Amino acid sequence: MAALLACPECGDPLRQRDRALRCDHGHSFDIARQGYVGLLTGASTKMTGDTPAMLDARAAFQGAGHFAPIAEAVAHAFRAGASGSAATPDGPMLEIGAGTGYYLATVLTTYPGLRGIALDVAKPAARRAARAHPGLASILADAWRGLPIRDGVLTGVLSVFAPRNPAEVARVLAPGGRFVVATPTARHLGELIEPLGMVQVDPDKDRRLAAALGDTFTRTEHTLVEFPMKLSRADVTNVVAMGPSAFHGTPADDPRIAALTDSTEVTASVAVSTYVPNP
Image (cartoon, rainbow, N blue to C red; front, side):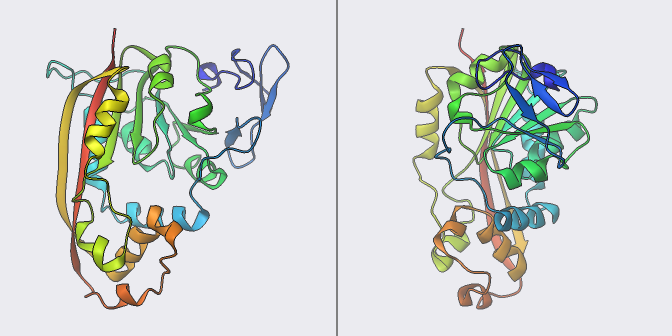
């Protein structure tokens, strides 16, 4: 996977030598024993990454299969062409803000033989993603500082509930490459937002996303993935603890969760959009 990476200091190609990646200018980045490569440079990043507790909750919730239809829709989006024709992706993938690596691992499982890079700004996420799939490499980097990826080498980039850097995504995509973005709608987890005081999704999110990407990309596909989930109290605790509401102090023993029935029907509602770079 080193053949896809660029030095975050100077932009030169990186090559693996023993347990490190090095460029011709002498910049060197060690491969951690946990399997990821740290490519964060300079001053501390301003991005807030997921905590180990958030990642544990997310892994438990994803492992229970609750978001499997979303992962499947993301994987399918890489097959659907702009004209409705099907084309199987045949090159390397990148997930920005990969977290546990769950969505990228689903894509790689759907298309055997593909390779992928999971990128996250949080060290606990980079460690966890390194174990998500045999064909996946994990890097620690800040997407807003620039993607440490060579120009035009990727078949696909995905961003699921994560930040995006449109100009950088367009730079690293090969001709014909696709950018798949999954964002929650205002209905997502709607039954829990008010009772548990969770962070609410901006109802104008889809328009703002289109405006942010419009100068760089054209949207070719747009699918609403919406389905009911039956969640236990433990599931509800995990879905609260794994997202942005965790930063607002919702504890695992929140009495509002304890007051719920042991099987609560909750709506999952996510928009999955496919974009191609503008000419």
